[in-house]
Length: 259
Ligand SMILES: [Zn+2]
Image (cartoon, rainbow, N blue to C red; front, top):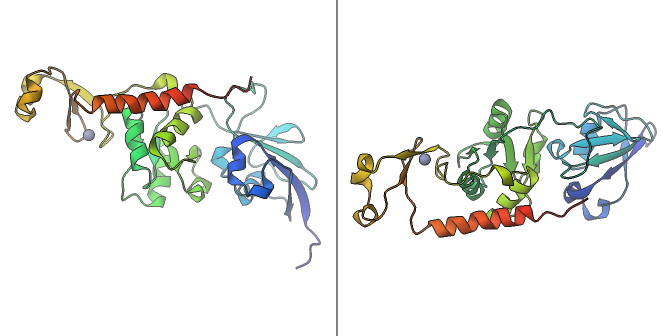
């Protein structure tokens, strides 16, 4: 097929959106050939960047929506979620921000899901979730889809998602806290790490038969999971969990300040 009839637009991706590009396309202007008048969203995804990672698109300096049709010669600047820049005068692509975010994690992110629950964030995860189920849950319940599979984020019905960069769970939790600016919303030990159920205080007498005698001797406060019935008390594993929380939040507050 000849090159005739093809037009070119010029894309530039900013900040961490470059993570999705091959090395030779990072931090530079990328010519993009197209025929007809495709939506800018399709071009962005064809270049490898999931639309859920994008928060602002400028074409010739004007902010546009995902459905903006490309014209020959368009210069397109694509930005991720801003953390400190004032963009209040520009129309951003997301609807209003989710107030207290909830998540659905893909099958490979079980440890991350447990850490997010530890921090108090409602996070669904199950080993048997198929991709289409995860996508459907994210869309139906307005949950942020967390995944290391960027293809999953390209589904049209997914409006909020994040591609996890790290392979290390504590690092992954740090990424999520930072990306969604959650450091101020952390409420540890309110949610069951195993099933995501809410933990409720329970009278010691009510659960006494389930408490190991050496624990009952010195501990009076217990939490019961409203989901799976697991019993929690402050025990020898707490310092380790608290260290995880400190690690996650310590790095989260140590953000590079763009001014
Ligand atoms: Zn539970």
